[in-house]
Length: 243
View 1 (cartoon, rainbow, N blue to C red):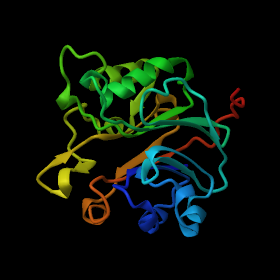
View 2: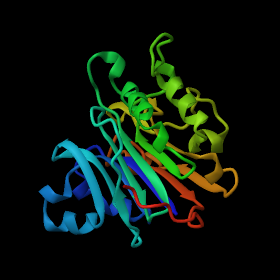
View 3: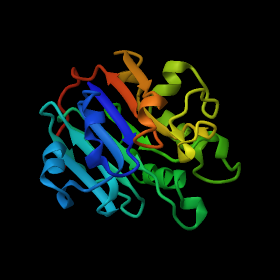
View 4: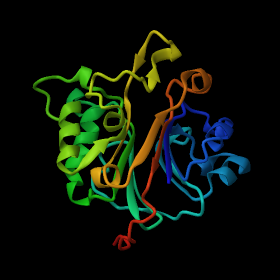
């Protein structure tokens, strides 16, 4: 199954052909429009999807392909923005993330994700993926801050969730050699701030592939590059329907 996560930098309805070329089964797109608020072509392309956002022009969407069913999940932590949990094909859970600024600063960006994870630890299992634009990297850790990047990575590791990029390339957090984001789309300002985390049982035992889109192709459309993961998860047994 192919999972693609991408911050489209707005205007997804004009960029859908780029994503179609990736042949994804599940798309997690940050900074995209609400399909219900735009034209018929975009709504048709969106198909089976769920979306959240404070502005109809910029939100977070999960889009299913290949006939997969999306089931929204009622997780805790609505005060944290923007997180979108869903059950995919009845077999695994996906937490889409696009962290936001907030006050106080300790609750902004990665602090938002840390707070959301604390509220939903019981919901995270070996059948969970967490992915999206975290707007975070270990290089910005504040040593005494609760819920910094390293704390989030450690919490996910306790639950058995590992970063596919770091597992595949055998690199340390904060020492990434391949960026996912170019500030102002400038080659001299690269950062690694987008992630896909999956349970180690879905990676070590079953195998997977992972890549990041090429800057030469994607920077014409966004300041972020897509994360592309192929996981062997079709064998997972059905999960119970959420209550």
